[in-house]
Structures are given as structure tokens and as C-alpha cells.
Length: 324
Image: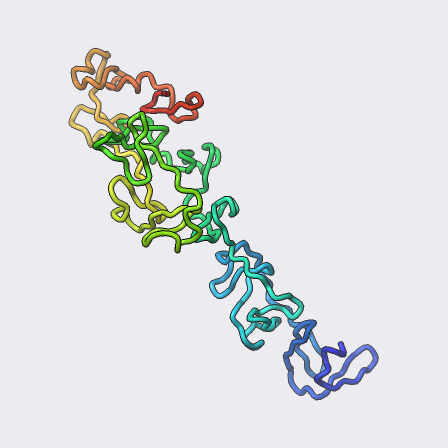
């Protein structure tokens, strides 16, 4: 303890050390630690517990993530640091700790981050969107895996009638149809089957937000439109988790019998006529060719063999309830 008490006088009585020259409790630090000392003796002042971190997002707003854990930066004097720490090269650290190295969680793509994080503005950040999935079992109860994203069941479709005008149900998503004079929403392209499909984002398009245009953010190495309301996203798209997405949510013609004329009932998003036999149905609507459960329905509804792509053979899609 001699080197710790060099600044005051002392005498040794048996096993106890009695100090002089210190009328009240004093605090000081040396290379081995920090202490409170008075005329009776000294006691250690431990530094605060340091929180381990994967990036700045796991530290308080006034601290930075480092290889030591969350640490305070920007000091110029020891008295600017909490007790138990000293100021070294602008960092508040315990006397025995080295100068820390910042670890903000830099990344280029989501692959550089843990599964519960995403690469946002070049830094691993807690996901605002559900993590990617490969099967329904990867999602929470009441959700299914669609296009590698966990979705609520009500945000998926089975038949075209659930999607509304100008869209068809492809692998549980209401996908826009397209032609030369009917272009796809931004972020999609028209395929040979006449419906829109997503265009994979460019690889390494950006490293952080500075590499994107105004109003965009860098997510997983690609620039995405940032938003707070659907109106900011343009035709055929909507705002979800703060980013613009192609709107593939169902938009049915009806959701309950009360949306239909008297005597009709709502089934699979469309108003249907009651029936007893198949022959009755085309008289109401040529698209309704079968009597199913006492209500007129489409051929696909009567012969459906899938609800999702996983119900079909490899390379096939489930379109309007039928593999093809």
C-alpha cells in the first residue's frame, strides 16, 4: 500500500496502518486504482460496471461502444469522469484499463450483423422489420413466411378475388398484373407470365446513407426510400416499417356479407350468389362455374391444390390457388 499513500504520512502499529495529514476523507487515483483515504485507512473505489455491447445502439446515448464495453468519451480531465475512472486519451477508463477501441458495429450488409440486427446506415442496428424467414415455423404465432418475410395471415391471399382489381394472388401475395401499357410499381419488373416480380437490389449500392439520394436510407447495402406515410411512396406502394414497399396486401371487394347486396354472401373477398347446383352459377356470373358449399365459386376455388408455393413442385408457384 506504500505507493498508494505516498502523498500522506503514516506509521504502522501491528497489522493496522494509521495515517496522518488527512483530517477528512480524500479521493485519489494512481496507476493501480482509485481510493478514499482518511486518518484511519484507505478503501478501494471500484469503477462502475461496464456494459458489454455489439454496437453503439446498446449503450446509453452519452456513451460509445468499445472493445471494453460501453465507455464515456470526450473527457479532458479526471474530474470529468465518474469515480473509479480516470481520463486517458479522451476516454473515461479504470486506471488499470487500456485505452479502448471504438466498435460501433460497422457493416456493409446484413450478413455482417447478428440475426436480430440489420445493416442500417453502415452500422448494425436493431431490426425495425421482422427478420427473414424460410418457413412458417420461423415466424410468430398467427404469422406465415411470405417472400422471406413474416406476415400476419390477414396480409396474405389464397385466391385472386381477395386481391382486388388489377392484381392476382401469387404465392400468398397480391401481385400486380402488367403489360406494355401497364407498368409495374417501382422495384418490380414484368415477367413473361404477365405479372410483376421483385427486382433484386444492387449488391453494394451503398455503404451508408451518404451513398443514397435525398429521402433514401442505406439498408443491407442498398438504397431504400424512407417514409412516414403511404402518400410518400407513390402508386402501388405503401409505407411499412419506415420504408416504401410494393403493396401486396389483399384488397378484397368485400370482407363481410353486409358489404354485398341482399341475398348475396361474401366468400374469398367477393360477393357470391347462393346456389344448389352448378348450373345455376354461370347465370349470375360466367366466372363462377361451380356451386361450392351452397355458394357460387370459381373453377380454381373448386379445384384448388395449393395455398402457398411450398404446396407445389419445385419451380412452380401457387397462382389463384392452383400450382403452375
